[in-house]
Length: 318
Image (cartoon, rainbow, N blue to C red; front, side):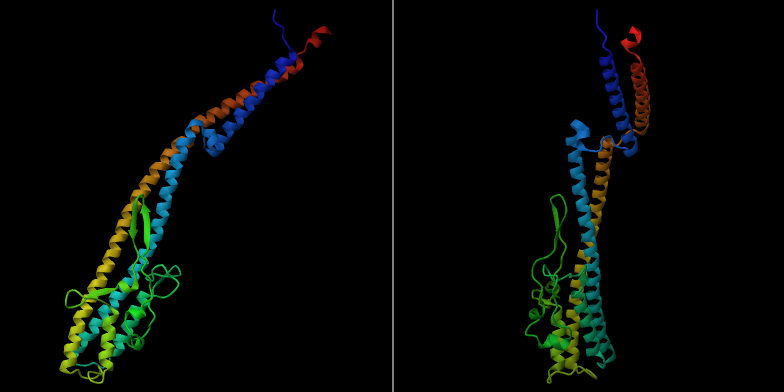
């Protein structure tokens, strides 16, 4: 005959009540957080897969953040490069007007203004740093501000202080692109089809020609020799303008490529989020049902404990 222990039954009922309360707390937490667990331990064997998915999502988000920074840089570069291209176009127009009107009254004043615009473009700043300075973004890459300073410098190269380190950005797995330009890289091809000169060289040569007593000044009505010289400079400015526009087109092509990669990353991120969600998010209906069932279990266990507290062998011995 089996013996029935009042204390043993009571302890068993209390244990059941505690388990039911814990199940209720867990169900309530799932309903409140809408997650199957609040830490990796709660996901059991699926924790390893979940960790890998979250790691992949974090890498994709990192590429998206990098892409946003690169896109902002490319947009700033586009503004700066187009500013330089517009200034070269305006310089061409100024010389073209001289050849058409047979008057150089404001030529050097116009060229001075366009040179300063080019200088401002090459000294363009983005987020506190100089865009075309290379790695040393704290120092302006162009060290002259006027045609007089440019003409007084030993060489054009001596007026440019950028280093040779271009901006490189990793925008995807195993994909890095060179997104930076350097101030001394704004060159054009001379008439011989081989020699590369910086765009500053055109302004320097015109200034030197105007300051030379034997050939200048470039004021008043131009002589035939001056017309020939200016016609040659017009062709050089056209080559420089074309080269600068090509640089702007390359910059725009990089921006388009970045947009395509961004779209791909956003789709990949959405897919990863769905995979993570499928493993972490609860089924709302099931969670509510579990909560209700656990509440019933707690009430039933509590009633059993209450009844056992009134049941004792001593009551029968009385």
